[in-house]
Length: 307
Image (tube, rainbow, N blue to C red; front, side):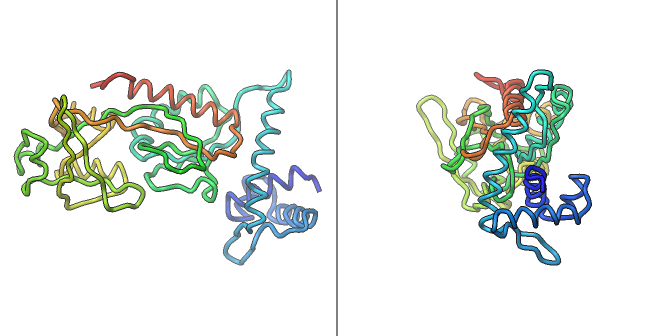
């Protein structure tokens, strides 16, 4: 048994959840992958995977082994690329999860530039606002707005997103244009509430002008946990939105959203990249993090708004 081949096969089976899918990515037949895993379990004298006719699940021992060997394999790949005469360009597969609006409006349109710079990096990208378990979901990193409270993660702040308040012309025609933020707590007005990480309780929206601070709750007929759907609800006239500038900019230019309370300010939303503390930072992941910082500097420059 080639130990490295067996380790790589085990990693692919865990990540794919299937011997057949793992075999396809490794360009091997299923029987060969099965044999590699069986020989690995025999050598280690532990059961790494639970197999059923429909699904493959990693055991507790297998999960511990997986976390250790992905770091080992990443170190080996990096050692190989650092040798004289070999390509030192980052390479490999990255599993990332980013907010859906950020993926749609910013990162994916910029990906051709990334690919031109790093043609040997392959992405498996989740575009969601859901809470991701980086270990069990086998994700290398997440990009998230707001504070990172999970102490098991290392978080790097990559941007400060300026926020504004907006509504569609149809909403304003129906409900009237509020002149003061406190009017949003009146019975005639509605907000679209964003539900963070499955928490439907929401939180107060804070606006400041000089020494005055307002904390607004607002009434809503819709709460939603996806950024693109949240924006769509505001464009449909279902309520007032709090949006990062990069999400609102084009819709304001097109006349589909109207800025409100422009003399008031919200605290900027920090944008982070987070990854497990014990995870080896590969060249590919480091390249991705640096690229996100570069892209966000264009779309959310420090010191102010871009519209």
